[in-house]
Length: 140
Image (cartoon, rainbow, N blue to C red; front, side, top):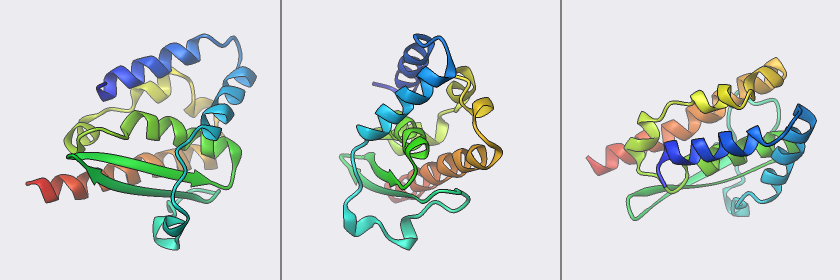
């Protein structure tokens, strides 16, 4: 599945809910299904800077695709990173770099986050794209 196809799928899923309480519950469920980061990668180096909560992200390159794992100490934040991991994991580095993140606005996520969580969201996207850039550089 392409990044855009995954994003469209997420937009469709969020459109099924009538209100934001249901969407938050769905995000919490997504966070619970997140492929967990190996404990050895829960280090200071893998913490995303700019997040109020602790969010750890690790990336590996497998068959020329970036595979992300993550965890967070906050349940909503874990749901947010789960959405991003679902979108960008198992994608080629260049596809991650080229992807826009308009789907976040389309599901209304940014407008329903506190300013500190919204900043954290931007930091998460930035970090995932930095991993993709590092792996893309290795491919060139």
